[in-house]
Image (cartoon, rainbow, N blue to C red; front, side):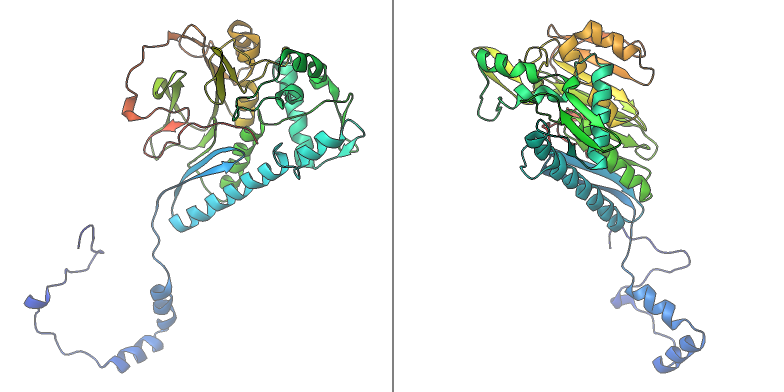
Length: 388
């Protein structure tokens, strides 16, 4: 038998053709009576009934939740329990999708978009808290991150290559502005100060869902894990003595990476103009909308943010697309818990002061044959991104 180890004190069995004569043994009924007298029968029965457990890495990919791919990998002392831990994470992801998707008419966010311009809407504590967080990142980013971008953003359809014309953007643009959102903590309501305002949490809800997934795993005793939702990831612990290795995808070559770095107990998000886009008369239209113009933001090609939580990295990863690399780096450098790597339209890589500078290398094969903006290795998830 392959891969079979003997327990200490055991001797190997001989094959039937070389079997030694068996010594006389006690009758079976007497053996059972002795075990019963010693109180060992229940333990023996439990040992025979208990399923075998073993430790190892457990992982799963699920497509379609929040419009993207969810990937969870964890170390489990009991792989059956590890599967249950992943079940709990996926259930939480589906709950967030059901609550915050703008593509589901029954979601809480869809209800807010229908009613909040007419009257204050009472919302759940979870959604209220995330709206507060979103407004905080609007202020940190000087308005570059703005969930009301959806007031124009809903006019785009990247599956059918549909985009609004200049007249449509001009008519809808005044509704963009995070200042149009009024939150009342005492009544736990949200109100839009003008008609036409829409919100979309696609730029922060995936990061939030990753943090929720990590919190669930920690509460269940998991100490080494990765949770990934599209371009947003967070890791706890390491890969059993080795750090998680993170690769940043080349903007024009999805099978190549431009740099790698180790990560332990951190989160990171990568936003890129190559995630959801279409070309129209030589112009790239992608899902990161400039709230000041209603057009796709083109100041950088890619932005990777590293910070303690995925909510934070997700909320900060679009800033450079709107403000440009120079102004965004000023913001990132002012935040001591944040690091950033930006790729400019001319192919340069720019870093925050706590990282080393470099330039984008020419296209070449990916290290280890894998390219991803998620941790790389035996079970690295493929890059995918969308919104809830």
